[in-house]
Length: 527
Image (cartoon, rainbow, N blue to C red; front, top):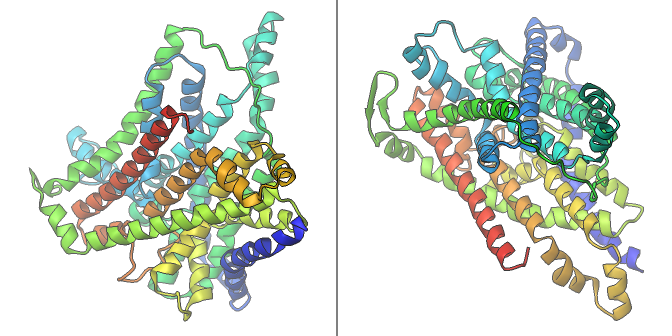
């Protein structure tokens, strides 16, 4: 009886996810069969873009993961001070669009960049190394937080036993650290690689003539309205994304949480801690200099000709619709976070707490959104929903962002529900307490912290995304993140910097509000 009553809910969620996730992808891939794929892929323009994407993604991934590992190890395994502040500062790049990182590098190191003129630097930031630098800034926080989470939950007992037995540190690294880190590190490398190779914000801003596949796709669809060629490029961009998704499923055990791990005893070492602090300090300096460039350029009269202080850029940005576009972004983000939390909770509850024959399918489809790059998802929505009632409306942007970011909050709740006593519903049924009352009175209060994190994740990412909405927005529904490239194209770098600053400020307010609320509830003993 219980399984029969849950079937309609599972079917409803499955139908929604099929309509919003799989159907657009199927429609997009169906276009590939209608064009001459061989003619497109042997075109020198496509070949060069593919090679460029692979080069950039490979080099940027190596640098990003190496920097992230050093930072994560410094925070998790040393006695440096101000760890909380360092973690927050190193996570700041996650709060602005990828295109803003490219713009920040242009402001600092462009032909007339602030540091270029100040230090008398030669050379050009545009092209390969500019894209690599921007991609590292964009992907570093994700790699850092993932590695920190892995190191934080490693058990120290094997190392203590090895030390007692007199096993050298190098042998411990090979025999203990490497087996523990191998699978999560593979997953992190592929996630970082996929983020970089499917991003078009950084190369669009700083790439110059160095074209990557996402930029080529953007130019073909936006500039030439060639949906057939765009679909072929999109299909190729799905390859690394699906490879990353498959490896992530094979290497990560979502239910394997080390509740009984023993934390590392952090012994003092002046040399180690000094080196670690310097490592983190350099990273924070790089991150803050890019963000600080937004503040600098926002309040100068005309960069780089007239660097005198002014507030004119703020007024000019709002006159050109900045306020309206900011409001669009806030509306979209609020709707995505509200609807997304509800849908993700229901899907996670059905798969974790009410297993059935459909649960495995629902779980797999819920995770599959991870494998679809935002720019591919946006194009698939154009192909699928053009001419429908939601096309050109705010609703399609909400739907695209909801699907684009659905998998992460779903996994947050899936893992959280797995940690709650699995016998609650059975005990409730024995006592005559309905399942809905168990959910409202027990499970939701225990999951409050996770629900807050899910909501803030969806809001922040919806505020700053450009990939999933670039093909779907109109003049009336455009989010402020898409204004950055528009302002830059019109040689209004000051307004582009202010738009980035508005997104950053909004996201910081949301993050601080969630943190303050969680701290308040924790003091009251509710969280």
